[in-house]
Image 1 (cartoon, one colour):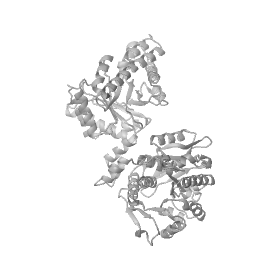
Image 2: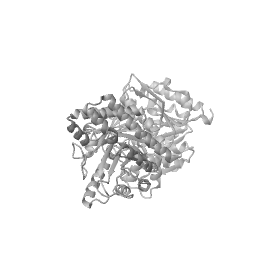
Image 3: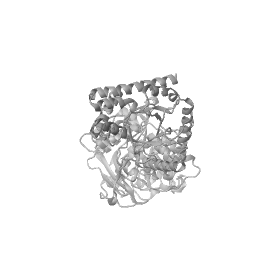
Image 4: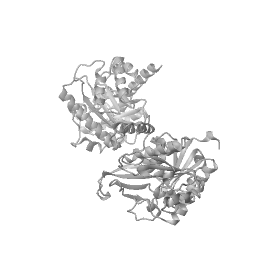
Length: 640
């Protein structure tokens, strides 16, 4: 097959599961009180890890026709993994693993894998065209443990070899998955067994790369003498063998096996504190393959593998902990690495921005997150709070009618009166923002039922972007400014801890005079205290100099910021449209999040009973359409 037909670098085959990670660290699994849900399964982790490092990857597996199977598929797509080989099994549930972090050496695991979807993979799931599209195919030891998955793996290997592709073998030995351990001993990595050795060795003659820990090399070679095991493997395969040495790094064996491990190429690891070893091997494989599939030296490949593994052992989770290429470059260039690597704020920030959901070149948002404004209007007109909630559902329907599934649209909705609309928005593809501030509070207070804002955010779906409004001026009195900044830092840390994006809205004009530098100064102050919002929401500015200053401030501090959306401040439609011109000249401005300019008249007429639901929806959609058209025209004029 010609080289040009290779559209993928790597296809991995095998396990795909949900990992439920205990969120409490340092205790028994019995004492865990909460769990984080992640994608798991060794080949799935590696496919995601390699994709984040820049390889074009695909996966062959089965998931259940259930919520968790859909979650895995969606996460793979977000990370750019080709899912043509991910089959939905309507008869079986998605595999599950429950994991805990007890201490640096103890990581309890419970595998729920009886009759699960990924272990039902068979030869019919192997598409020769798909397999041949990759430069290499990776199989793992777990998928040699049952006849059907063994047959599927061997078929993929034969297709790959027939097409002149490489075959990678991740030994991936879990005795419990071979029925050699009790079910509560999933963490045990080694039980000698002759039948397992014979089964694993059947793939050796066709391998180009073999990767394993010492325990895995022992089971593959059939002896606990490492050199003897390596020689047994070499007698059946000419493949490059990589022996993972944990914190010490790895050893590479390209030809004849020497008399001692120390006599071959050993590439040192990176000294970091081990927080979680689970997933480190999958990360190593992803890093190694990034180099190996691009023709780099074995030593360089080992360095990339060691670095990727070091980053992941410092984090919670497997697949979500996998680094991006930008993180890798930053890590390798660090002159002084903290031993507690997860405390490096820049590395954490690069991971955050590299793994966010979606890309937004434009964002136009219908904002109906207002609370006091609706309450005041309803009270004036004698309407109930229930009517406010109904109107917010109409607003969502209006946005959907205009957007027709276009992901460039969004909604801002509150949990007080807009909860039913937030729930309905869950099934739509739009950007969702949700306010956290107590309306009109200055200094800022959080509108929560908890003293700790993170406890509130922990109850929010992860696709809800946390929106916070600061009535903030850089020349505010020092005590007011400091109180607000403390709240901003608390909220930023809470968002990162719970996995929510953050939109910071700043209205400076209510606290003092505003000039062309005011907004940029406020933005710089937030960055100075360590707050890096994903989004900014800012007042319209009539002059291009203001927007140039804003753009410089953001890009200087965080070139990964998603951008700025304009707020409306209830100004008339024509005046708001006029403000689009100067804003559109700044590339950092992506659109708007406007409310009262769009909904005020329609809301009052509907609450009075002067118009029905359909008329209200039509009015809202029409008003939103006018602003969207005006914004796009302003952007188009700027880009000519």
